[in-house]
Image: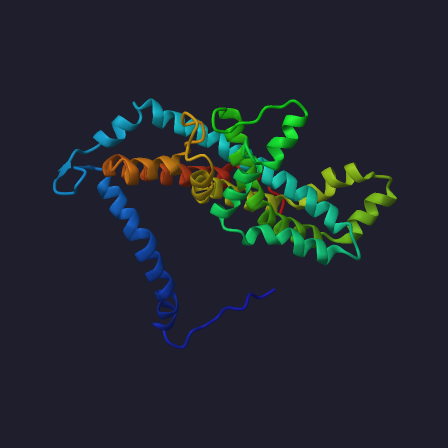
Length: 294
């Protein structure tokens, strides 16, 4: 089979078509990233009147700071929990919706709505539901003898932010899982059913392996989401507390740079965070993608 190729009559046209996207990438990503890298080698006073080039002193100080090391471990727990919970629950919803015939479109529409909610609003909604004084969910837990107070309990605070962040991402994952399920040929499922395979057997031997490309894509997206896009949720619910139990890396960048005015340390943290996300993405593409069945 011969592959069709697009031939441009003008050699300059492809570069002109790419120019807007390249300009946006340069202005909104490459230039700020370069500024952050440069600032990470500087030490500035709180008023910005003087800057001193300190080489790697900001990075060295970071990895000797117990608070920063704590934020790394908190981020790891938070990211794994959010990715596992949001992807697992959305896959369960997608499998059940895919088996429906009449009300599939209605359920899909209802399940997509949470994705339109801003992260800060999602955080506030869950904060109200789990509020120790007026929250309906905290009241229901107290009926069963479970005391809830995310203001003083590190475990309760982590559960709160994980639930809020996962709920916000479930709709996105659900759409991709549902699309992946609908693309699986129904003849394969029928053949397995005729051979005597039960629902569980069909799912783990046929459906889930064929969903591996979608699962791999969502794994990368969810890790990046948990690392960066959950800042507003943390800020609206716990602000990194109590006792820095929910102080993830992206929130610490804000706390040290905006609130603490330690711009050099904040820039170094942002560079480390960007490096961690790039490293995780490379590992996912190099190691996990080999197990994906296309």
